[in-house]
Amino acid sequence: MSFKDAVIPVGPIAFSKKTCLHMCGYTYHRNKIIKSQNKVYWRCEDRDCRAYIHTTLSNVYLSDNETPHIHEPNMNDVLIQQFKAQVITRVRSELLTPGVIHSEELAKANMPPSAMANLPTAQSMRKSKL
Image 1 (cartoon, rainbow, N blue to C red):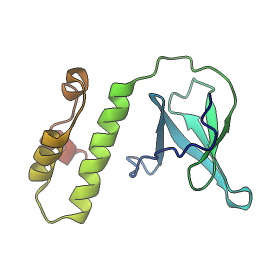
Image 2 (cartoon, rainbow, N blue to C red):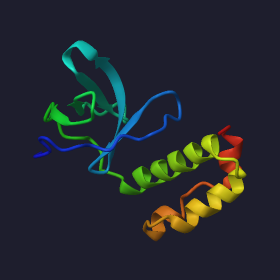
Image 3 (cartoon, one colour):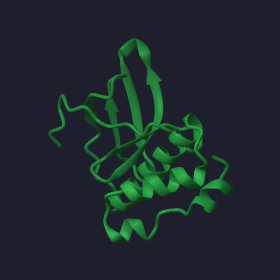
Image 4 (cartoon, helix red, strand yellow):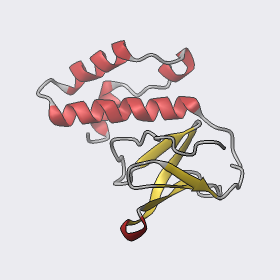
């Protein structure tokens, strides 16, 4: 990978108190932070997969363990997680109802039909306790 000095987008919200990072169709969960070394360790979300990466605290790619993932990348899953994160962020910061926010984000969503078909409904997101 040639991601040296690339800024990596980190998911802005944690669904289970874990911050996510999305890169190249794979999702990583923050494993640990070492502030003294300005380093964050990320592991693949698939617990059987041994792939991991390191970034700086400001999300600049540093390195990986060069272990290939044991699964295919899933861009649709990344897009769905980003959609959910955006809805949750807006619900927590705006006075609009969750249903209205969900509808607005759905209208703005620019993703393939296969990802759109798997997006959660406003009601299912409400049940998961925004």
